Amino acid sequence: MLRSLYSGISGLRSHQAMLDVTGNNIANVNTTGFKASAAQFQDTLSQLTAGAGAPQGEVGGTNPAQIGLGVQVAGISTNFSQGSSQATGKSTDLLISGDGLFITKMSGETLYTRAGAFDFDSAGRLVTPDGAIVQGWGADNGVVSDGGPTGNITLPVGAIIGATPTANAAFGGNLPSDAADGTELKRDFEIFDDLGASSTVTLTFTRSLDANATRPADGWIVSNADNTAETVSLSANGTGGFTASGPLTVNDTVTIDLSELRGFADLTTVSGSATDGKAAGTLNSYTLSADGTLVGLFSNGEQLAIGRIALANFVNPGGLEKAGSSAYRATFNSGAPTVGTAGTSGLGSLSSGALEMSNVDLSQEFTNLIVAQRGFQANARIITTSDEVLQELTNLKR
Image (cartoon, rainbow, N blue to C red):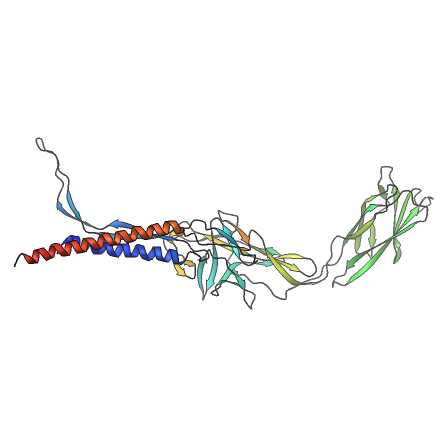
């Protein structure tokens, strides 16, 4: 049989594979996080009909004569270039800008994906549309210990943050230097106890112009309205500030900072508040930061890290095996994954409320369709031509 016949068949098979790859790319033009593939061809073994000859004294060297035996698909590579971004406004939609893949677990198998269309399931776990659970690190009292083994990213629905007692408060603003002797200014602020119960503390600022053992000649007396024993005097220092006779402590637990008070004329702006202490709070909502940290917003105004999404990178991402559902699995040639936080160790940053679209270039794919189609037609012509030659050969007997 003619070698050209089998060469044409190999060309049909190879260009059919190219058509299949191109068709799959076009079909996934709107698939989130999809990476286009490309088929590469190489020739098969060539039959040697005459070997090379070395040059002699009176005769020149000759080149080998070989007849190729067709074409084959050398490989199908994946293009991991960045796809365009599409804003969605959904906080759980994540876009990786740069290198890296999300880590997911599906039925105990670890998979990797660029598609960041996530959502929370009824158990509070961050999952992909097909139910794979996004992996990362949890937080302990708002501190994320990344770098260790990864686990499920979970939003603790109904989580409660404990109360913090008030230990410090601060007052600032201006006490008017032109106020009459005995003028009283009362200011309230809220404090919390160990169980988060709130109470109101009232400080009284009394103008003092007549000096005695407890009164400055030009200043103010600061006292707790609920306990007159808690008193400190403020003496004007001549530069618009005050010198306190000592620290002021309320209820033996809360220290009041009065160092920012000023004493200029015609201004009454003194005010204060607790600088720490919170009531207990429940989880109200969450946000996702650029490094993948899931931050919980609590009803008491606190913000605490709940967890952090992990990203993985590979020495040879082209060696990953497509596992369906826009996911990949590691292979021997992809290398082991390097796991880290977004924005570090060569990993890209994360953007919330956006998705990475397919990186398929339609103009290139349609051109590839034409090339594959013409290549298929040309190889089909090889077969028909070889068939005609064989027909002529069989007709010799007539």
